[in-house]
Amino acid sequence: MKHVTLNPSKLKGEVVIPTSKSVCHRAVICAGLSEGVSNIDNVVFSQDVEATCGAMSNLGVEIALDKEASKIKVKGAAKLEPKDVSINCFESGSTLRFLIPVAATTGKKVTFDGKGKLVERPLQDYYRIFDEQQIHYENADEKLPLTIDGKLKAGEYRIKGDVSSQFISGLLFALPLLDGDSKIIVTTELESKPYVDLTIDALKTFSVDVENVNYREFIIKGNQKYKASDYRVEGDFSQVAFWLVAGSIGADVVCDGMNINSLQGDKAVLEIIKSMGGEISVEGNKIKAIPSKTKGTVIDAAECPDLVPVLTVLAALSEGTTEIVNASRLRFKESDRLSAITSELNKIGADIEEKEDGLVIRGKEFLIGGTVDSWNDHRIAMALAVASIRCKEPVIIRDSSCIKKSYPNFWEHFKELGGNLNEWSLGE
Image (cartoon, rainbow, N blue to C red; front, side, top):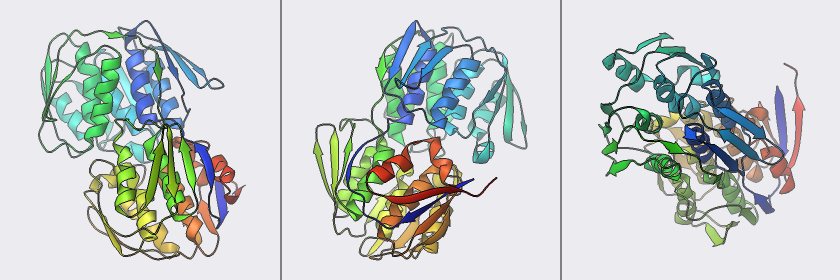
């Protein structure tokens, strides 16, 4: 297991932001369901993206990864024929929840497995659908592995909107392939709407239409055909957030490779930092964070839950009190992120109170430092790394290699910006 020691140092310079794994998941799935060959460019091969590529391959899609050129070549299978009945999603919630309905369009027996916290991520909305449609399924006390055996049918689907938008996205990928028309009815207020927007945008790129009725209903015509398309993946706003916070509490950091017109919900980080008094400038594809004296605010996490760990760091080093609300879904990520970020930042001197669905953070000028744990969660590890910038003593992060899940080059970029770190192993 690898650990990292971070000696406090301001980060300064320019970094090219890795591309969005949320967008890449969607492009790979749509390309895999298309007739013809699609080329997906500007790919960062995180563990999650590789999990989706592997899963689509198991469902009968020809996928070639060119890591040197950062490209994926996908020869779609307009009719999926699973060539391996077992799909390992590793720790990728997107892979699991997106592809369960897709696999169910085949009518074949398929088993989904995973590792870490993914094994117990909630899937109740799908279980209810399987019960209604008499699709046979087996699991281990509502945990993975999950085996499904039956064919998804067109019709009306009722889905909660406050658990995870991934269930809606999964159905949006699958329902256009069915013989009849379908409708998704969202039974509660839909949170994380931008993630559904990303799905609908990807579908449109690959010639599939969905009618969105105010995020309360989604109307999907059946017998649609995905058509191959070349696709370039844009920079990831959930990753740029780490460097923008680093710039705000440290020195000037310029982030390249961003699409300021992106549909990504995590683009909200720009306005949140500004609302706290941070200075952000945009020039073309570059976003610059300038050191600022930031102040507490109220942050609604309903549409941007992935930003919470690093925004908690910013709040912990801002004047006054910050409250993060509508964040209960963070308890079902790679870790219970509300507990994880509270526990670990408090260990190094922060003042954070954990609530049922959020956090109360009383800011300080500096934190102390010490030994913390990543909870095997990439976003917790990266947030703690950013916190080290304003610590008085070194920060040791246990299990630092978990960043490979989404941002394999994070520690390299940290060094390139002037970070003083030493990564080391303690054996297995």
